[in-house]
Image (cartoon, rainbow, N blue to C red; front, side, top):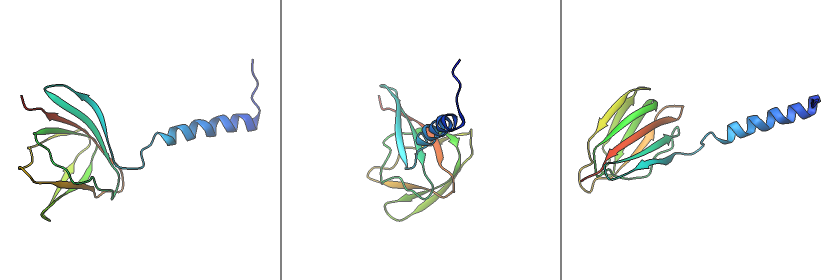
Length: 122
């Protein structure tokens, strides 16, 4: 049996904690999950006060809030819309109008995590 002294055990515990912290995202990101001819699925993590870059959605999509919060959608023309997503609930968002871009800003102090299931045109 291997005996671990105090300093060795402390190093193991700190190392394990560091690995756990390293997995926590620090920036807003989109993580692809699955794609076929019917749907495109990705996980989006929106960090507090970090906007998603301007983009658009060609197709309608379902949003499942893994970690909810208040999101402000800022359209390219300056218009804004607030959405409140509750953890564990699903929402439908229509396709964006042609040529209209928007960015999203997390207005909370915690990351918002959503799974997006976007329909693909046949």
